[in-house]
Image (cartoon, rainbow, N blue to C red; front, side):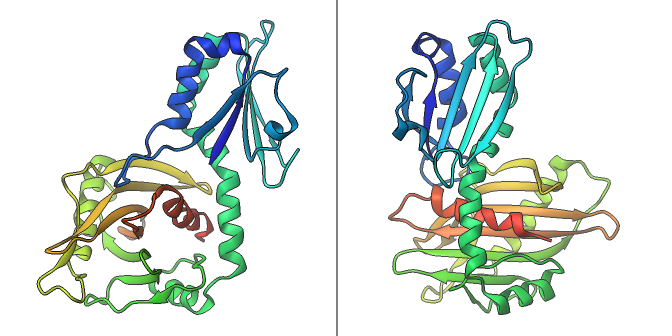
Length: 295
């Protein structure tokens, strides 16, 4: 997720650099520690860009052409390396480029994340847990890739599906369940209802070695809600942190909710992480990529 920015020094030394840093280095919501969407490893002018710079996995090129009428971008994949995305933004001046960056921030971030996501999905699809994928389809009605080395857990509440991949000092989780909702409610009301539904399901999960423990959303950290488009399907995305009461476990989670207005049912798919000794950004991105396989 490291980015090389190719931009002439004169433009970069002004406010444009602030806009690019806001785009790339803003903290991702919902992580237990501050971690940015991307990391700018280098800014270099067009004339000074080396072959090594051009072979970087993500390259963000900003071209300022006075005769350019409207700002636009183009995507070039795998030109100098594989995998690689070169995102070229063309504008007439720095102010126009800044305005475009702030207006299209989410779109530009997603373009640069696509290469990373494709690599994660390639690895997941190459070694997938076929039996768990069948179980997931039977439980939720949806197909989704589940990577190998996950195993099925047995929660006390059988209405929640739970898969876990354990490492020595960390673990990745996938949860899924269905809940009712009111198709006539606004998104703010539904966001709160889904948070409550997640908490109710989490409360049925306990640490096996701690009597009276239960999982819950960490309400002292904000849960950030957004409506996202995943493969032309609108979903409610919730990002936040979880913890275990009476224990010292906790981590990050991202939940995606698919609303089905014809039945008044919502399917909630949660990716969660426990990794107290590691950065969580990449491990969560690895899990979140799986939602792009949902059918």
